[in-house]
Length: 300
Length: 268
Image (cartoon, rainbow over all chains, first blue to last red):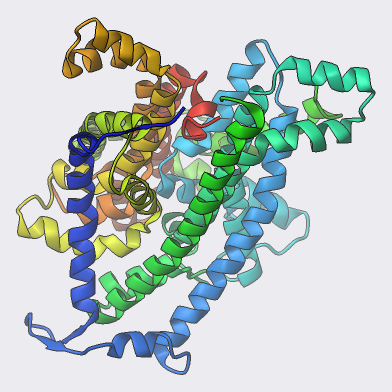
């Protein structure tokens, strides 16, 4: 079914356009403005051209070094949590009960971590992992492991990763569950008649049906982990040293901590640009997948 | 049917993994500070509601909850009301720049809050909204409006177009069709979108903290500041944490049947 061309539809979109433009374009213009200037306080600004960008993209300067270090850290972090959360989410979705009251219970418990304010998530794991008062830290230390996320880099990373898995795997699981639910029973019956193995059912029926939601899951998880701020900030404060300082934490340090407006603005723009590019790639893949689908399977 | 071996075990283990840290927080919130620090107990041996009483009787604490709820509600109302017509437009019509606009909205959902913290601070200070719930509510629109448009577009698209056409043939004007026919048809979708706006506005801290100082300070900011000022009052911190989980748990219950579809942005 083709959509009708109607330019008047712009009137319907106008409110959204205005609201988002007010809260996105206006601030972004301020950022662009700052990124080209330098200030010595007193609201006096000096033209600095592309100076900040040059500094930012040159790893030999202090700013550039911090940028690339935090970018690299953030990419590793995103890669690790995607590698854990996507397969785990699929497994959990496949393990969901099919019917009965347990379904509702499982869904509510799964969704629970998603509804907890992010700083409380940090607080929960901060407490949970402490060697003196936290169940996890206490147990690990009594098992003979010297676990301390405040002083040990590896432990800090492990804590931040486990926390993220705890916080967001449910999202992947819920998405996959929604995909699985849309598979008609007839598919499974047909597979049974054909004598298909469990693995074959997964490969030929379940995975293709989950394709679309998995794409959304990867997109959301990548983006949100790429801009993670609150949880690691509460738990580790970006430390020990700089070992868990991700880009957003670095950015807030520069912007609100040191009030280096020019540097922060330049970093913001490059950061935003990276996100825009990744977003565009996903969007293209997603709309293409959406365009192919109705032709293959008839109207959805 | 289409299940995997050992699924009961897997799902049980995973749910325990999810609940254990939350249980620990609840457990601590009912303990006295001396019990927390001195002994390791799996349940409160001297259960106390002292921590909760302090929150409910101290205005600087409970006003934090009210402030948070204020901007969350304002934001949800704004997001849904502007997103509804837009979702209809995206679902039914083609117009100049529609795809670009949609992508631009999507990209704003993904924009890192850290980028906007400082410019928002300047913007809302300049127009005199700083430290009001409106500032936070408007700031949260940047990710909630695109999200609401996305979710609602999926739900509107599942309404057959014949219904619109029949309504117009019957002489319904566009606003009347919208309110009398479309909105009731996608009521569950609106509920889901509202739930997600509520959720993302409720869990966000960075912007909420940056845009408020005294009068509109959200609970999450009250938590971080009061606790660091008073030394580490673990029991109180835990109780405050538990109270922030409750509103979320309540709303989940109402939308439990639509959660999965909503997380898929109405696109399953």
